Image (tube, rainbow, N blue to C red):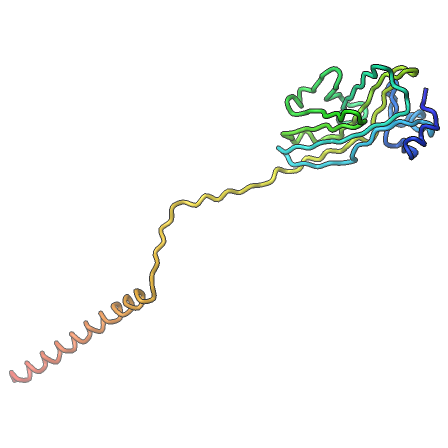
Length: 214
């Protein structure tokens, strides 16, 4: 039995059924039962998220309904991946975690609120998928009710941030002052001049000696 139309006033808006589907049992998207203006239940979750490889991400969701719950509602949250009928990767009541997400996934349900957060960390490239939240409760008069998001959340895994570390080895720095450079230049220039003068002087002495002999 669907919620009474009057419940819509409690929530203050009319739900868009293109974003969720009551599944009892699970009905494939596209069926005639998908769109019913009198339904008053739904799941809200972000359309898309992105996070770097090796990082973490959290898919927040909230749900609502108008059924009167049983004394023990046996709330169960499940998450599917890939498509609407994809494999279950997490089930809160069965304490089930898919092997691909072992030690990498957790669910935080806020007490007293119809909302929660599913977090995945140490992200891998293969985690890039579409994720669908599903809610199951026991009602007082209408038995078990199950509904699930249709579009889900598209998770995109980006490349890990490239961090370049430059290691500098020991270096030797030689500081040369202008004075040192000038002295060095003067020595280099003065040396050949001295040699040239010595040669000229020797030639003059030789010519003088030869002339005196003659």
